[in-house]
Length: 504
Ligand code: UN1
Image 1 (cartoon, helix red, strand yellow):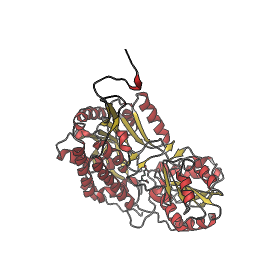
Image 2 (spheres, rainbow, N blue to C red):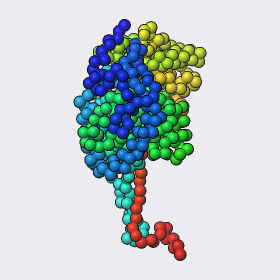
Image 3 (cartoon, rainbow, N blue to C red):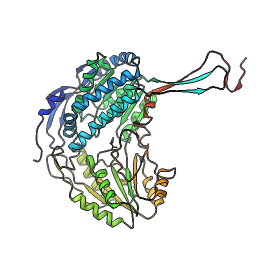
Image 4 (tube, helix red, strand yellow):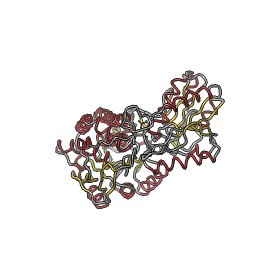
């Protein structure tokens, strides 16, 4: 076995062999099913967690509704100070929490630590934002009037996150929601409960130290039942959901039925286009990180590589060469580039996907098999296939890269835009006329449109999210915060009506 077993460090972040999975009204509870958290590298149990029951959920939401009334009255920069302290608490445990992310999710350690860094960055961003939730004064056409646009909190924001970024995506949402004056209700992925618990403990510690109600941050380990309760709950003004397009659509429909707001970050099917003038060395390094990083389990993973016919073979040869050097193994081990898939089911889906690829005319250039071991390892895979094959339209969540050839930029953009999803995209070229076409109205139809960098690894300062089946949401930086608040416009005491209307 190439997996080392060392769970001692978990004590330092508040995780034991048996854990309660609901942080409710400032204390830890659990009266739902007991589940095991598994190490994807060997499928052995790391620890047990008692998930939330609907009773725990109700108790938590009741307290959270009370806390919302208090938290929205705390001045925004003071809320920022609490988020600053959360950032400090995370900084102090960067390595331990990063190690847990690597252990429980299966991504390699530098990426596990990078993920915790991402939530720390979000805290820093949100602290600054807490002094910049600016409204505006709009000139009125009426005498003695002005229109004042100010931003008020929504109340409670629900955050449902996925296994692949088990704490960074919480950060994108929670850091902003909190400085905007909202309480947060979090449900992490059912297969990463220890990360949910460890992250919540750090946040809870800060609330406690500041004598604030613990219910400002309410957190549940659980599955679909708790997720549905959040979607249905009228007390939750905004539900931010990260996951597949299929489940996202169900969440959106449920939230719509009660006229709630939804923020969706769903499936991607991201392509990298390499033009004839590209820096090929840069492109190959970028594709490797984009397609193999996190074992292809990022929503921003590059799934389609579009190569100009004149450099097709050259890029492919270099790429296949670096693929052969990818070290597969224990994600906690130094030098490993490719850890396991997250679950045995993901490994089975990989095998199913490979069968579908072959039956649809795909040619496996490298990889294509699972790795025989007790963990969920698979080979990094490159497939030559037509852009019209059905499998290419779907998101196969693993390290499988589809390569295809094009002749013109127009054709490449058409292929880029030909899938249902629209999260991230990138082009490699040095020509400004191509770059501006690519980022313009008739270029990429994705939310993230990159040039000469991978499709993944976005930094938090920009708004993150995508179009079409990716759901249209924007999280993290830029002006994403406006989604976590509501706008009001007030005006003066006289009643001259706008548009010159005389009403009796
Ligand atoms: C995700 O996979 O859900 O841009 C998020 C990136 C990361 C976030 C990915 N910063 O790849």
